[in-house]
Image (cartoon, rainbow over all chains, first blue to last red; front, side, top):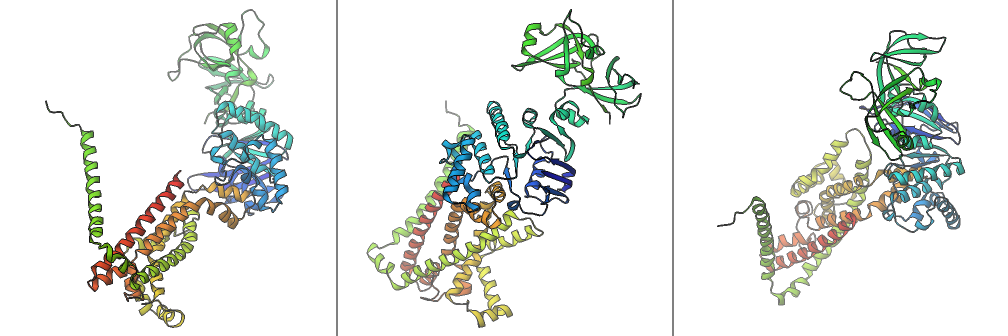
Length: 369
Length: 266
């Protein structure tokens, strides 16, 4: 188990502030945040390459805050993989075993085993400079894994790879983790990567942990506006609470002259200014003649598709409510993401008039600062 | 109608003509030395005791001085490259002083130290003599070339990916093992190139050597001192032979340096 307590690091122009979190045994934890959030700094402190100004780090219950990296038994994979350029793949992978004075036979068996499991056996006698990005990543992972570390710490391991290869490697990593059950902390700023791999997600923004929890928790129940906007929720709207109905567990929001119903949250009072948002995937297109689901009935809008963009498997529709006033020059009120199949079946082209419903439970409300 | 010369052509003509002037100048200098040679007399002077002595002395002192400088410069450069400490900039600047200071001034400072200070006199009287001795040549060369070695090595260590050392640490290497197993092999070509450049600077060192070790025939007579003594006794022919030896060494060193640095860049 990895545990970080009251951790602070001050670099003058950047601070990691009061970081507290833990990663359970065997868990795959994603440290998610935008560039410059302090993710790598935090990882370097856990690895032992930096010392925090305050706070403590525990690995398997043992405090390691002042222990050098060579005594922490952590498999570390830095962002650029840092393969030793003058050693071939075999010597790179076996470096940790040679330091531990394994015999040549033991080293050979272990290297071949790990190379086999990561499908890099054919690369063993090549130099790192001749490998592709994906091959380098697997070699670096093999080198980190072969020393049988308690934990694996991966710093943006897929950031420089192309999209297809990345997806392939995510799947390999999922299988590898399932097989080894190694406690892993993985840094990324890629949302898709985070939600593909992470059992637990910690969101670090500007040196502060904004939220941590299961991937579903973080994705569907953002607890701050910063998290919501980092997670790419594009429908961010400003309004005012006009009524609170505790009995029915909902609040009414006035927005651009319309009323929107959302779930009740304890911290709000009538009249307070708020920001609220809804994922583009949570806005549903109502088909003519079909019964409207209960969860959508409170928030129905008629309007027109003013633009649409294809992403291959999905389409983004830009929807404008009839007669709505443009705000900040924006021509649309909502972004809606639909599968390509729906787009084609309903013929959702530019100019088409449609009715949409906002899922009450999917509307996330935050205080306006 | 006369063709108008555009500014790009003019620019090319300007840089090429400068290059031609520089090449002609170097060629003229080389030719003036080579033209001076009477090839029949060459071997007599080349194999004279004095020239052979100065060649041997120069090779030995430059090699020893370079070895000492490298042994001191490697840890110094690594410390300056990897550590952050108060006063680092001041130390960095101090190390550069011998590069800027005239070697004659460096030699004078050394002479004053050994002749006029308590510590210097103590060393001279009780440990070993440096003034007007062969050891003084090595000391003077080290004083002049150490800064160059440290500067070259620091840029080499700066260029090495610190992440490799970090990963080695996480794999179980302490700082010493990471240095010897990762950093030094990665810096190997750079260190060899730095050794060659430092050695070349040491073998041509004159000013500091003259001040500290003096110019005694067949005692502290390195190749540059031999040129100086040959002119002093109006033996221009011997001076030219020694110049040719230094020229040959310079060409060899520059070619070797170029080969090694090209390998680093590739």
